[in-house]
Amino acid sequence: MESEKILEDEFKKFKKSFFVITKNFLLTISFFLGIYCIFFKNKRDLYLGISLTLLAPLAINAPIFIYRRISWIREKYSVRILKLWIGISLLFLILSTSGAIYLWYIPIEFDLYVHFIENFLASFLIVFFISIYREKKKGYHFSAKKAGWLIFWCSLGIAILWELYQFTCDKIFGTRTWYDPFQWILWDTISDALLGIAGGTVGAFLVGKFFWDKILNYFKR
Image (cartoon, rainbow, N blue to C red; front, side, top):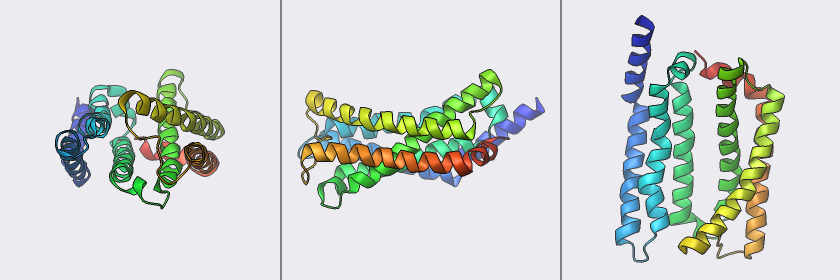
C-alpha cells in the first residue's frame, strides 16, 4: 500500500508539473485552431480541423490514462516514459501543424526535414513500446542490435505507408496532403520517402550502436 501511495503521489506531481501545463496549453491552442479550420477558415479544412480538435488530444493524452490504469507499467517505469511520449507527440503536432498552415507552401522543402525527424521518432516509439511489452511477457527487452534493425525496418514501412495514406486521404476527402506546389508529385513522393528512410537509418544506427541500453535504464525505476 505504501508503494502504491508513492506511485500515486508521483503521478499527481506529474499532472501538476510545468511540462503538463505546457502540454495542456498547446492542446488548447490546437483545439481552437481546429475549430477555426472547420468553421471559420475561408476554405474549410475538415481533415486538419478534426486532426487538431480530436485526434491530437486523443493521441497525446491516451497514454496518460493507460499508464494510470496498468499497474505493472507504473511499477517498472517512471513518469519519464510519459514525458517521452508527450514530448515527441507535441513535436509531431508542432511540426505538422506549422507545415500544414504555412511552411509546406513556401519553397524551403520543410516537408523533407519533417519526414527525416518524424519517421525516426515514430519508428523508435513503436519499437520502444513493443520492447516494453516483450519484457513483460518474456522477461527481457530487445537487444540493442535487434532494436536498431527493427527501427530501420519500421522506418522503411512507415515511409511507404505514409505516402499511400496521404494519397488515399486526398482521393477520399479531397485534401492536398500528397500535393507539393513546388515539385513534380512523383519526385515529392520519392524524396519524402527517401528522407524518412534516411532519418530512420541514422536514428537506428545511433540507437542500436550507442543509446539503446541507456534509454531503457533511464526510464526504468
